[in-house]
Length: 223
Image (cartoon, rainbow, N blue to C red):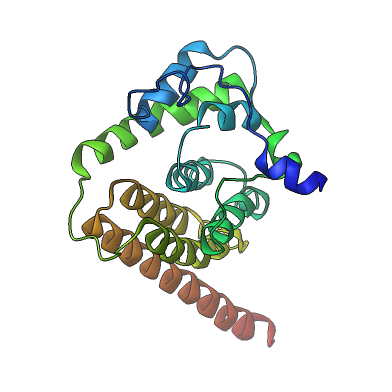
């Protein structure tokens, strides 16, 4: 029961973005929330704090955020850990969970103020450009749940590619997940197609890297 309670627990919203704080308005855009967090942040910024600020957001927003974390210039191999939340969020979408749950060990992780500033410096303009261009069009799914489950399955496949420890091979599938999440948030079928295409290209590149590395190892070491 403790696991169920943790999954259903809602954290307080220190940035005033919850539905209770704005009962008659739509949630602010992700870029606006991150800009407010950057202005208010003091010291380290925990994932728990970020989840609180995104409390009224859909799975799509969490998908975008967890993907964008993996697009930061962390040391090689970091995505083995940081890519896991993409897989967890995508799995919850596939199985139709009503709310987003993240494990305690991930919620306890923190970004330094410098790292958070670096992330928001490039992420906010990227999101603003996407938010200005994305709009409802050509959406192929008849209901919200069917769209979430399908995009969740697509994100799961690309999320697994993010976790696989291939040097410099994780940025592109993470970008594909972020694009698919943005497409889901606005029901934009054209952007979804771009995200799927980006993911397919990224997986093809990863397969090519593995094949080339295997051929080189066979040539040099006789494996």
